[in-house]
Image 1 (tube, rainbow, N blue to C red):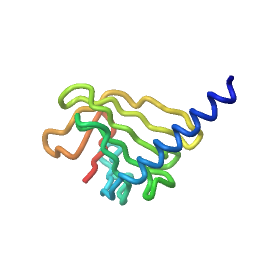
Image 2 (image 1 turned 90 degrees about the vertical axis):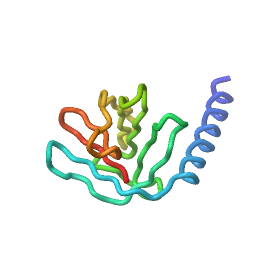
Image 3 (image 1 turned 45 degrees about the vertical axis):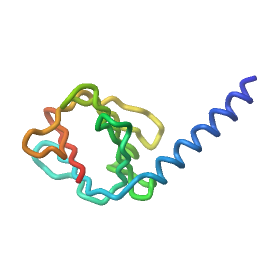
Image 4 (image 1 turned 120 degrees about the horizontal axis):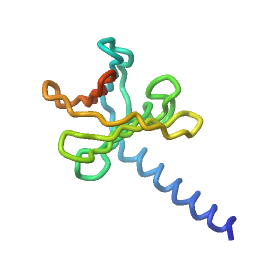
Length: 119
């Protein structure tokens, strides 16, 4: 029974990943730690639903968006408020916490120490 479930789950994951890569588009990703720009590169941008949620990955769905992190998800939970998570190369889905949309630059989401901007 478990083997059958694992096969179905694996196929579903493959289909989901394939659709993410197929629909992703290039974007400029800038990540600031404090006031210091730590990441500035082209990444893959993937919209998630209609509420403004999205994810970013390394270009072509491969590689890292930042050291040790292969995937960042910005999930909008209320207007101007999002839950941010990062997926490590080891498969650990880490919660980064609540971020707010910048009033100055609407392409950016910030918390007390990090700013993620996607153009």
